Image 1 (cartoon, rainbow, N blue to C red):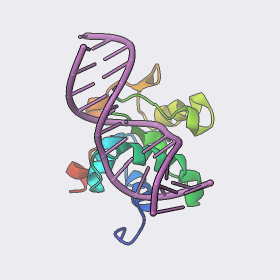
Image 2 (image 1 turned 90 degrees about the vertical axis):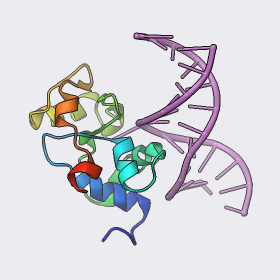
Image 3 (image 1 turned 135 degrees about the vertical axis):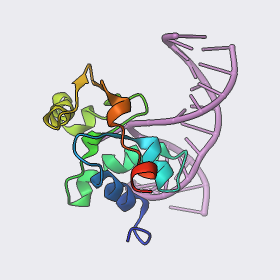
Length: 111
DNA sequence: GGTGTGACAATGG
DNA sequence: GCCATTGCCACAC
């Protein structure tokens, strides 16, 4: 499983489990990994997601406000928004509109 | 092995 | 209720 993996691997794993059309938050992922309060680590891990060798749907991970904080790190500013809209996720002004509805909590969904 | 950092989150004014 | 500050913990240098 992912227990033996590093924290980054765990982040990559959980992030890859986010179903299309759903979004999650850094804090939720961090809490699911047992590192509650280290939400920043999740963002940092996703920052190095390009080193994982696999594509990580980091566009499905936003902050607790549903704002696409890391859009700039995604390459281009519109890339993240474009990917979300491609998955039927309504995004406007760099934030998810129906964020509360499509919010995917690993603690609740994966359990 | 110590310091800095980071795509956040929570609290305080 | 909005803006500024602090805490946070794991990883890179």
